[in-house]
Image (cartoon, rainbow, N blue to C red; front, side, top):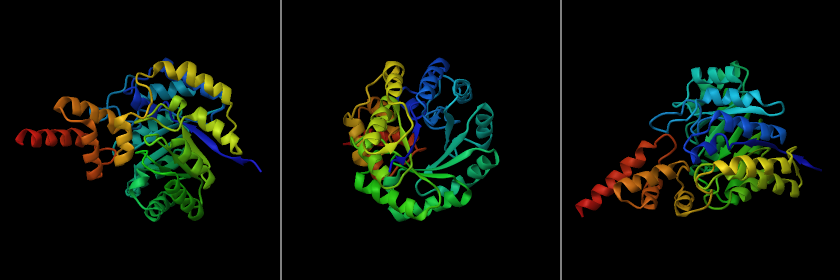
Length: 337
């Protein structure tokens, strides 16, 4: 029997990290139209760090989230528009504006031990009529039982779907399977998975998640995303179909979007270079890669050493300012030697 999975495309959100949040209205409109024609069920559109993320801390957007959401909504007939929100970065007011602009779904993202901070935003989103996803980041940093505990909190607040998110691209397939199987067994809502390719395992991990019962799967056209990128959507569709899963996505049309529309805007190839590999090896939030490279250049420190130290400190998303602090401290220690 064919198994059905739902695909969520993140190139217009996670991919924003890779192009320093410089998406234009025209780019979003063209890419969204192509994805819609390929019948991708959900398309996530936001600053890389979610709505409200445009700032000194996370990087300024070329175009506001609201303008991009409106542009995406105008050209969709099949797809739904999703946004990401990190409590403490995005606010309930930001969410109201996104809803008015056309958002159908919001993914409320917290660190994998901080689900309790999502309550206000999940409740508010449900009141707005949004489909709500509880998005538990850095899932490699906690044992499966702890992840389940946090997932149950999000479920109790009203989340319609719960995601295990490998933000650092640090999980191995068996670890993904262990986490997803437990969530699927113990939760009463569908389970999803979001991967990064820092160890070259994004596709393997996504397939492991599907085989363990995850029915919502993230991908990014041309793998555009933080670090070494995400699970490449067009590859994911092919692999899933060959594995007996039904996605409803037109593979060739999706290939064309990736090749003709996404590829030309990529500044740096989505490859596993030494910094991306260090992210996965040290278990560091994928969007820290560019921050570490910039700080490394400024202070004359190997960016890999910065990332390893951040991993030891268990720094998480939202602590981008720590990257420069760590680099400055390492430089000071070097100069004293």
